[in-house]
Image 1 (tube, helix red, strand yellow):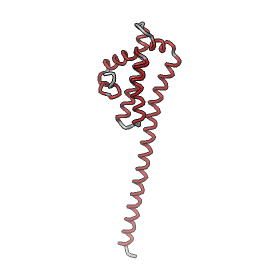
Image 2: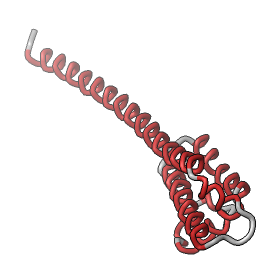
Image 3: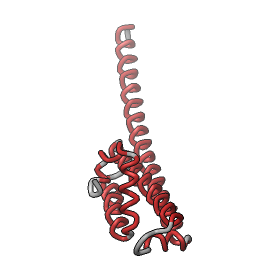
Image 4: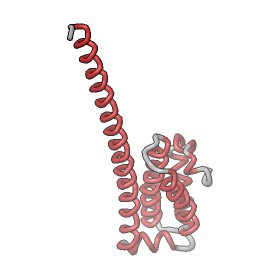
Length: 148
């Protein structure tokens, strides 16, 4: 066997090794993307779980959200702060969806949650509208389209 033949065999093995390495790295990148999507989804769901827990355990927030008529200054502030937390969670979901970090099904569920919350708590709608007035850059987010 001559040196040219050995060199050709070595190049073939080298090319195969590079190909195997690239395939392995592609699989690792895919797996990392799946994990990142899962983590983002989990974090967004945790935000909503925290909001639901707060609603379930704080009767003053429940009362302020469900109250008919004028709110006291304290109730008004509670509802605005609660709406602020919801808007942050909704905006986070929109941003994550825009960046491909959450599944469309999750995004649609969160987008549906906007209308559900506003229908459920009329006092919240005014505060979400105020939040959008205070942070107009978020008006471009599709998740707030029903409010604009």
